[in-house]
Image (cartoon, rainbow, N blue to C red; front, side, top):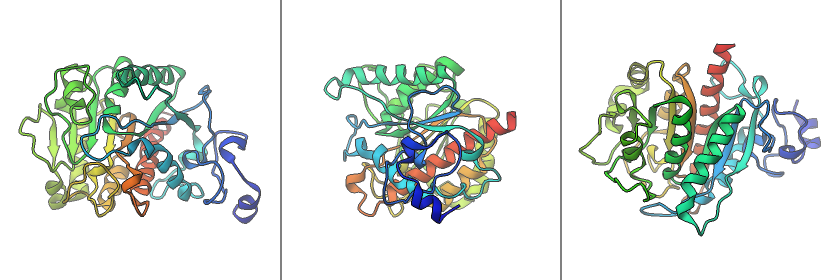
Length: 322
């Protein structure tokens, strides 16, 4: 593996014969599907589908996350050669992970977007695989949770974020990236008593019953203690993991719409995600990567790494179930 494959492989997003195995295509060329996985809308036989949601029309500050899925895919080419680091198995050799492309929607009919996303995810879940979404702003989590709750019932939410995103908003017609988990809790899509928010560092006095491990708590107690507490809260319930890239400090992820100082380090996030192996993860997303403000590409790189960890967490469960 190596030189010959890099010389002979090109556009493996379209030309690879199957859905398993690594890619040795040049990182700087070719079609940039996520991790060079096969692009396909046919999900028959797929274990997990990665898909993009290029939507950012509900932001409160800097826009640009509609370009996030493309940037995350491009950054992921750096990881396509090697098995994911720190795991005792290779998810991409053992399981069929595909890139299902992006959600199609009419950008001029914003009011129709949430239902279109819920319908899209519902159809993917009905086809068999779990999903990992590449955002997009954080409002996309709410329509996705609607589809997941229809299948699994009320979920435990594991949220990495600088913001609680539970500001009160009882208008279901509003689309806002700071209120979607308030609505998800109110509608019973998620159970706050078995849910955890990690990395919070903005003020919202009403926690709605969510367990909060704020950024300072993580810094003072460390990833191992944080993971033990998260496991205790989640138990064996179905978990949806939503990772807002602004959970990371702006030093590690400057390319986001609402950066807040004092955040998690990339090392802390990596350790926590890997040590969460065994939680009952049923799906997830990584959101709020905004390429116009990501001058070095570091934020997209972080987003790609988070997405890989979500894939490994999901496939770890498949492996345990045999």
